[in-house]
Image (cartoon, each protein chain N blue to C red):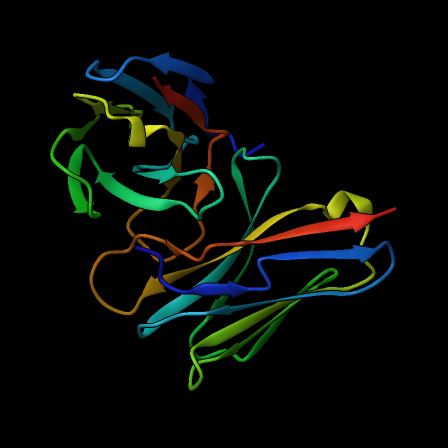
Length: 113
Length: 112
């Protein structure tokens, strides 16, 4: 166990709806990153938050947005859901913006119908 | 987009055998990391190798890095049924953002 928790575990939404996924980082970690993993693929970087500011973003449209709170927990929001958004969403935390390993949560499985 | 490719995509071996997985990448890196994922759940960090290192060991794991060929390999010795999982390499670029860029993964099945 890494100490990173995510909620909910599973979620089913309808195309066009909005969804919010939550992540609690490991104690002492102030950087949270979000990844999307489609079935059979490796994770793809969505964005990263460091001390409540977004400081890195992958190739995802603006309907993917996020927040980081003063306790360093984080939310991922996805608006106008599309079928292709169905995936496992992973968050990972670490201390600082360094280049070290990241600690992943168990993920949220999102299904869009 | 994925940073690179992993080879093979799938590997099936018997318990006690060694498993070797390869990873190629495209850009200059600061370090390369290997992660394991069980049944589509969270990833677990296995080992990190920096660009100025050539080989690293951790228990039954041995990782090599060849920056001239932009490739890495992960060797698991004396495999066990519990090693059955997907294995991903991930790179951190030398400059720019500090996110992990993952390969497509190798699915390892260890038969008891």
